[in-house]
Length: 163
Image 1 (tube, rainbow, N blue to C red):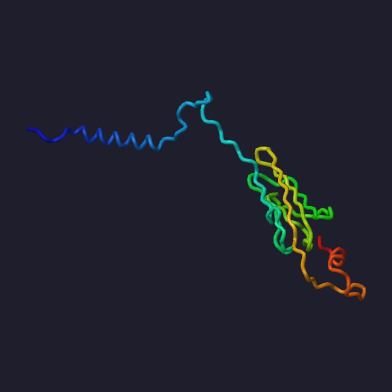
Image 2 (image 1 turned 90 degrees about the vertical axis):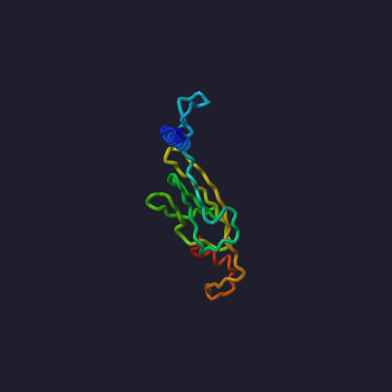
């Protein structure tokens, strides 16, 4: 009496395991599309992200803290920064136009608005507006003007080069 299994059983078992492994690794989008299309559609590129630092509506920003506008997935087309008096703050783009920074120091006790537009590599545009305020110091050392130490700090700042 022969109690050994036939030799083809291990081969069939190995083949079944191989098919199961290949089926598990196969991409799921190879079947027919339920939308009637010819196959899976190409992924849609997201709009370029625009990141503004400091965060929108921040209200205790130190004027010495870094301020920047950056984009990913495109280039910055325009960036306009204005203070609460309507003065446009000059800025500098990096050569690749991925980052912008103000070119002058910021002032104390001011509110700034940044409006930025980024152009996506695919041609679409994204707009972003952000506003933040710098701290208003309780005490600010001031320089003597025309022999008078009594000039209020906000008038002293208005005459300075701070934006």
